[in-house]
Image (cartoon, rainbow, N blue to C red; front, side):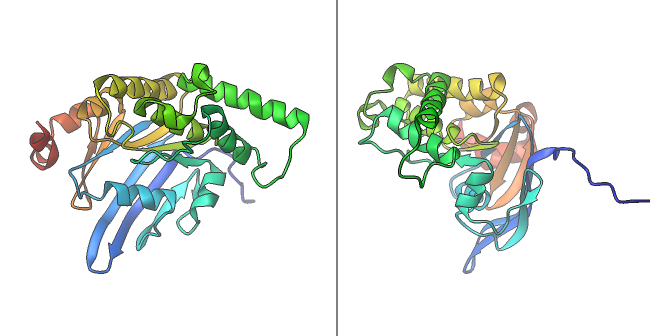
Length: 259
């Protein structure tokens, strides 16, 4: 019988398999596995020092794992550098907003759009290409609700709008997987609500696959399909918001302290 090559898309966008990370004698992440199917919103929570950001750095390529494998869209990316993961369709935001404050909202998103289109290293692009970039930027700004502020300098915006601009820059890369690191960090109630609603629209209305680290449990339980809980670098629990809320080990390690 001849070999048959499968053309089916992988079931999961992301498969992290038994990943660990050591810094000298410190074990920051220990044997963590996580699988995220297409279209899911997965929240990663845990107390301070649980290893959440290190885990994100392993997924996005900022750190190589000490052991374990990371598979993205069916491809082993364990040894790939960050920029190659981006080119494959992975985009990330950071706990401290990463934007170009001296540029306008439009210009910030245009940078990501040109990179995604392969124009990043070209000194000039043609009229038709420029029009297509402009169309994509407008489309992205409409998606995040910043179209009316396209000509504003990002550095002059409120914190919530700056975060939305950073998310827009990530979306401009046309990602298959969007990694959001503490998207509501440092925000008041209204800004937190606005960013949570943006993430909900991206997930529910536009079917983005999202993994987020978040400290605000109201946001987590409002948005997540499933939740993974890290504690002391290990996976403590995984389940639906209802299952995690009822988990006594999670309550003892994290939720109880946050109450």
